Image (tube, rainbow, N blue to C red; front, side, top):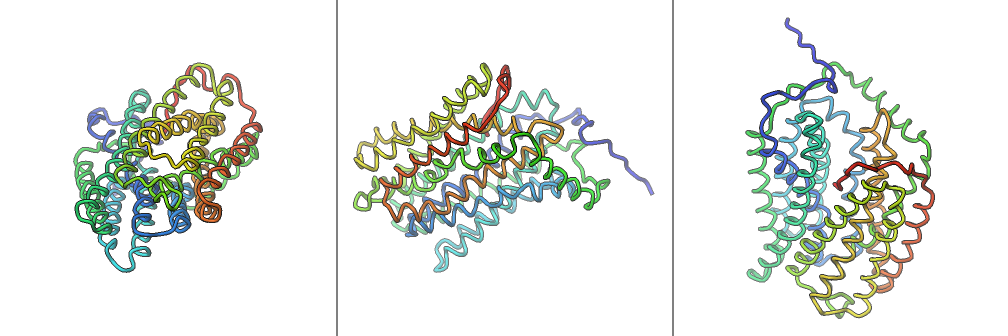
Length: 441
C-alpha cells in the first residue's frame, strides 16, 4: 500500500499555480464578518423591534459571544481533521442553513427559543469558520503575500460590517415601512442573507485554491494534540506579567462592553421611554455606516502612529481616547437630542475614539503573545477578549432597566476608571511596535 509522507506544515510552500488571491480573499473575509455582525449587532435591533426588553436582549445576545470565547478549545481539532478548505466550505453552508432557520422561525409563536437556537448554530459555525479561514490564509499565501494582502482582508471585513450593521438593518427598516409586518420584514432580510451565503459557498467551492500543504494531519494523534494543548495553555499563564495582562484583557474594554449592548436600544426607544426615537433605517445609517467609518478611521490612524513611535508612547492617549468620548451618550441621554445630524456627529466621535483606543488593546495582545507559541497564545488572548465583552454585556440590560439611560451612561463613565487602572499595571518595551504596521481585525 502506498504511503504518503507530508513535510511539516510550517516548511511547505503554497502551490506555485495558486489562484489569484484577489479572487478569494475579499469574499472569504466578507463572509467571515457577516455572521458575526448578524449575531452581535443585527440581532439586538431585531429583538427590540419584536418587543423584547433591554435586559433580555443584552443577556441573550451577550451569551452568543461564548463560541468566540472558547474556540481555542476546538481549534486543534480543526487543524487535525480535514483540510482548512473543507472546513471553510462546510461552515459556510452551515451558516447559510442557520440564517435560513432564523428567517423561517421568526414569524412563529415560539420565535425567541427557535431563533436563538439557530443563532447559536450560526455563532459556533462562524467561530469555526474564523479558525479555518485564518489558517487557510497562512497556508495558501507566501509570507510576502500574507503581508501584502493583510490590508485587503481587513478592508473587506470592514465593508461587511457596514453591509450587515448598516445596509441589512436599513433593508429591514424599509420592509417594515412597506409591509407594516415587523417579523415578516426581518424574515425576508434573513432569507436574503441566507441566499447570499449559498452563493458565497458555491463561489468558494470553485475559486478557493487547493494548497498542497492544506491536508488532514494524520501524523498527529489526538492524545499528543491534547497534551500539546495543555502545555500551551499552561505556558500562557506562566509568561511574565501574566496577571496584569489578563486583567488588562478582561477589563480594558469594560465601558464599551456595557455600552455596545445598550447604545442601539437607547437610540431606537421612543422619547417617552428615555430614548431618541430613531427609526430602524436611521439606526442602520448611524451605527452601520457613520459609526463604522469613524471606527475604521480611528483604527487606521492608531495603527499608523503606533507603528511610528511604538505602543508605549501612545498607550495613554489611546486610553483616554477609548474612554472620554463615551460622554457623548451622557449628553444625548440628558438632552434627548432630535437633531439627526448631531447624533451622527456624536456617534462618529465616540466610534473614532474607540477605534483609536482599541489599537492599544490589539497591539498588546500581539505583544503578550510573542514567543515560540505565538499563534496559540494569541488565540487564547482573543478568547479573553470575547469574555471581556460577553460577561459585562449579560448584565448591561438589567443595570439599564434599574437606573434608566442617563444614570446607566454615568455608570459607563465611572467604569472608565477601571480601564485607566488596568492600563497603569502594564510594563511595555518602548521599542515594541516601532517600524511595524498593525491593522485592526
